[in-house]
Image 1 (cartoon, rainbow over the protein chains, first blue to last red):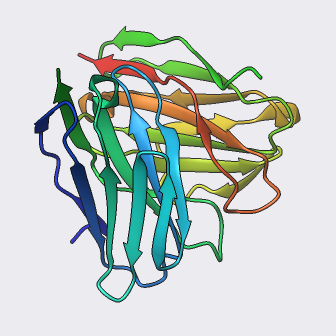
Image 2: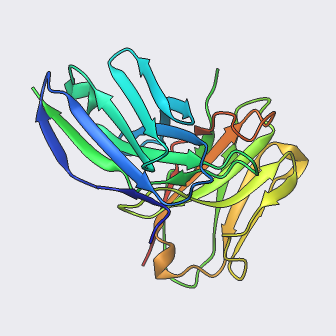
Length: 112
Length: 115
């Protein structure tokens, strides 16, 4: 079993839709949770960063962490064609070193 | 602020050949990471440097992969000899290095194809 599981999709939605992306994990030592966005032929860029359980909102993006269920989500409201990319969840133990544990990514297409 | 620079962007080699990738991190960033991203998978950490010292190389296949970070700035990742399964994008990332949880900034990657 991989430490971080993420449905690769692909996910295709119309412009303006609400998008829900999810990851599950098995290691209870993870304390920091991130969502990265990766455009084709580019490196990942950090979108959202959350510590422990709870919600965090930034514009059209909301990140949720439920440590009791080992489940994290990213919601995108009013999705735009420019949101079309691969979304990677990532996690860190925080106590030792800086290694990020990534999910395999979900490919999202938002069509006009 | 300039981002993480990597070169070359693309490389095609035959199996058993050697190859080297170069990374220049964001100025002032003490921590440098090399990740391997195989098609359809998330990045996997190969090695982490703090300044010019190795912090974590537990997932680096040391029989064929090597990396160095001389003078605590630029870094080079080498594969010798390459295998078919080394085909991947090699991502370099850097962070301030003040805390383990500092944001990691990624370069565009080097796409390696081994034939």
